[in-house]
Image (cartoon, rainbow, N blue to C red; front, side):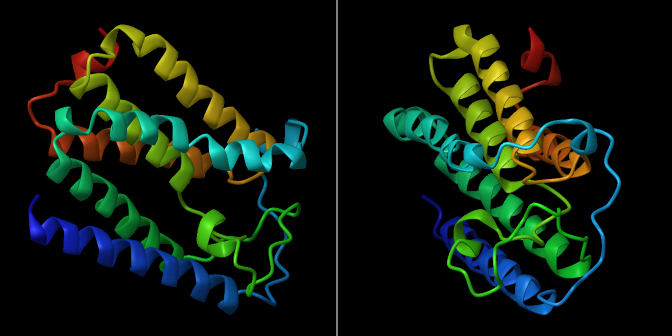
Length: 196
């Protein structure tokens, strides 16, 4: 493994965690109303599914760890590090009103795992799941399960809406960023392979 990519990966994680904590602290007295969102506003809210939404990141990650020897680890570290870095930058630069159902306090330790109430612009959960799924599909022998993996990504997307973890624009941007970074880092993979 490339030491520079490991260092970049670790610094990106620390930066993202700091960004989440700082922005939740900075916005602790923010009273702005939730933004209009035609998807979130018209779907039911299921608070009890929050933990399931959080846990969905683990199965694709565990599969990656099982197939560790087939995965280009340097690419994966760079890929995930860039997602953390971009999330940190997005969270720091623009404060978007929290969803009315979010009640995580700025000093709650959940911020380090869930991002808190002000970690908007794009969803880390969805971005990581898409990234882990893409590495599983294209670097292991699991390409034959592609349709199940895409269903898994769709399930995560829907749960993001039902748990009101993110605005719909956050999820759309996660899809764009995840696929774009994966394809730019793994240049030998083509856009056609995503669907065929």
